[in-house]
Length: 406
Image 1 (cartoon, rainbow, N blue to C red):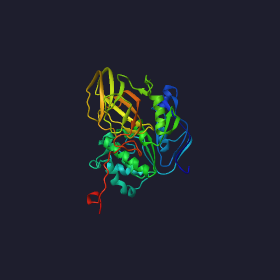
Image 2 (cartoon, rainbow, N blue to C red):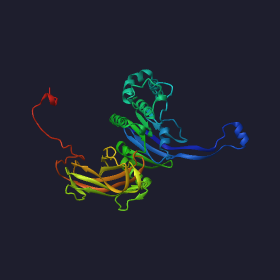
Image 3 (cartoon, helix red, strand yellow):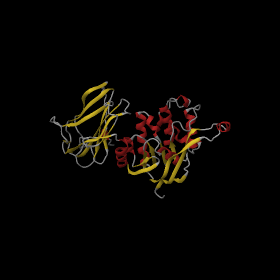
Image 4 (cartoon, one colour):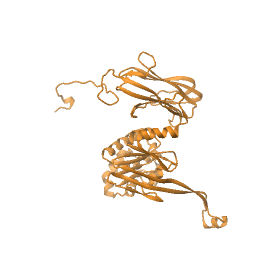
């Protein structure tokens, strides 16, 4: 326990799933029998340790037990067997609006929520301004929270949870409803907490974000711990086994999706206009996606992602963010992503492609690591380290006021 923030020791948790619960003693007598139920094991003999300062993710299908374990860590639920030890002060955001009173204002709920987390009024006074500033709700902080949107609920709840200086922060999927600007502030705050050696445990279905944020991940399946390890390794195993509906016929990578709109082929077009898998830093290239619609699809969103050979996501743009509109996909066609100067440093990279609905929720086709390509030295010539060139202009000269000299 010396270097562990959380120790989960052989934990099991069972729930009863009632089919026809008796609502009163009279109902029980009239029916002549007890309520019928079946037992559901949400967690079965789970053991794991989370080191201090680690960002730890829990993934798995709905009903796999990850949220139940998070609630046991937060002491909202008590395990039926085994025990959980947590070293330090816990702050948790597990359910939308948990701990809020709808008739109270945002300000009053900040103090109420802080009290639930074990803080006194003077302690909350010290961080109140930071909480309101982080939430971005200063204009409506005196309004009853019953008038808040779901996104505003999350922003306020998370702002309290993350600004009370916790040793251990537990966060469930509720962050998914935050807007883009708030998500960016959350990621910056996560980085601050990691730098301060805080421990975070996150539950999410957003695998791309989990791959970037988490150091380690635990994969749960039917209440049992399936695999624990490096975030990228566990996610790759999870995707390969759980989310794959069909295997890429070319054997280049895993593939899944509903299939109404498919990416038939992917090409990387080099500066000479010829498809290639060998490029140079600084090249003008095109990522070309050939697609076929097996039925008309409105407003599809195409995406590409580049990963280093070690699994680091370098970039993952999509057509919606770029402002490219394809109101209706019918028949077949191509989507080109033109890169004027490829700033990747020499190395080996994998290209993933996808096409989703407009909300980027439903995958029509996702082809993981469909093309592997090599980048050789080019212009600018940099090889010291990293994955991309800044293409910076180096100069030397006398110190000036404009450069910060005094």
